[in-house]
Image (cartoon, rainbow, N blue to C red; front, side, top):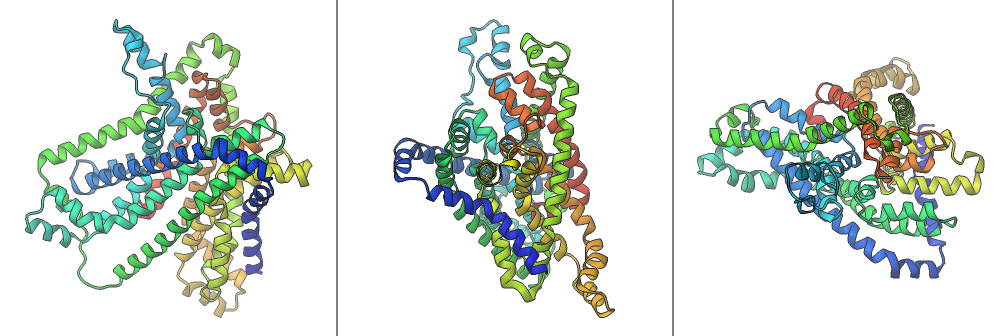
Length: 540
């Protein structure tokens, strides 16, 4: 029964990928020729360039910040560890809005320049509507994917390595380059691959920054035509870019886990390189580290939240004529927030429950081959950005089940598929933390496998399961393209309202729902991150 349930979940997860592949392969040759000559070449260049620059920028920033926190000895290391992880709670498209509000033509920075008596046209504004702008905005949102595992690895590195390097006269920078970087390469590479996969799937940020990638073009083809074969064809090219990254990331993660297990049982005297080593750093280096970390927190956390709060207050206290036309009140925003919370809570719960069967199967060593097959099937949505999941379900429902099209049930299905890979991975980790001797003892005492699972395994895994639910909720409440394409008429979430207002350049109306969304995610991440999960667990 467990194997049958797990295989059913895997088949459900792989269904959108199979359908999109079938529709893309069924497109006629003339359509493919037109796409290759007209769009695919430029989209490939733009998308690959964005993935490379964002991965390099985020990885360099994450490694540098992790080394400053764990090795340079700044005051308040515990605070910096949490503060530098909190940008995970701010969607990249929300960060983009804050930078657009300040640095666009006619924005806050240009108005301040004119108020100082200078010519507004001469204002030194960065070009945010470019590859560089998209790289910086997305990179500032995603660097925690590298910072967290690298910081966790630095905390777990034996102090004897640093002491040996210091005895040989190595400077702090030489220690970073010659000692730590080789040890940190697996964590750096895994984080960089996750960033690359996220960048490939990003829709909201590139749309708001007007940088053409595959996700934006897929949505344009979806929204602008009745025949969606072109959108399916473009989706296949994007899937072809994503799948190799997923395979490489999965292999690197398995190899990293094996190395950690070997190091954990390899014997020897292990002493963590902690507070004592960091506190011996020169005072100028510690001061430089504190100033640098404060600058990053200012740019990635305080700046976007402050801009959104100020503009949201303006929209409520001193609405313009455009604000009156849009008629976005605090009561409307509260309703959208309720929609977001209810949808995220319901789909996180459903995804967690559905993922129990594949996660439980993965913990059984007797069914390792079957568990590997199911795991591969459940990871299929990883290869599908939210815009492709939405496209696949819209085409499937409109063709085979029209009554499901644009319903809450269709939206919930899409969101569950979006969350399923994360839910299976988190569920497997939570169940694997339960000592196998306990359910085995319950079986010896006469309990059935199902009874032992619900009476012994689940209660022990409950704290980790609750933390996993919070992470799934965090992903769901920020989701934009899946909700945008599958929502029923009149069902708006905070993410949809942000996108609708930003697409019309009415940023005062985007600021209020964006600020409320950030407030919700910050409260949840701040409550769960330091207490329930632990810094090292989140990093791994």
